[in-house]
Image (cartoon, rainbow over all chains, first blue to last red; front, side, top):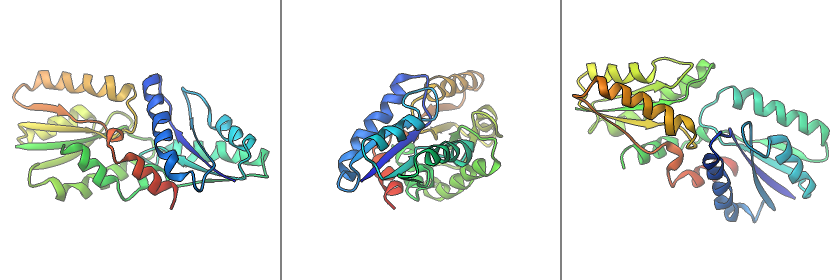
Length: 120
Length: 120
């Protein structure tokens, strides 16, 4: 059973965290053929934490979890923090394979998105 | 004369800030018909600051500057920090109109970008 966890930074503004939850619901229909559960989690300032988000998916039966860093730039959160957290949880749960994809800003679609926002 | 300023958070990792500079160069050809100068600036941790980035464009003759927040979620940086900085610079330079566009994460293309990254 495959699952997906969208990992965002988290904000003091609950409206900002709600955006991530809405996005998670929005993409779910597109991946539910291949991913039984899709969740979101936050590095800081909001719940669930990444650890909790992963463990919840494992408890729901996930044998493979795809962690998608919802970050634009490859800062320390993407290079260090998220991999460290995932590595710690992975050691505690060897029966589930946890993989981290590229961060969002790595997509080749980003210049087009920027123009879409900037020129409208 | 129109100019565009892409405003990112800024990182301790210079490679991350270089990503923004590369992106700025990448989108420039697509907007230079309508924008004589395209620059980038950082809220913190990298140079130029937003203030400096705007003033440089004004010194280059910009009469209208489009500030594009390169952020994924509508956190306090997007709702408070960037508008406050822009407002302060605007008061000091009334001869140039400074407008702030939607932040990147507001684009309706984002779910597609997420799937593009998550499923590849």
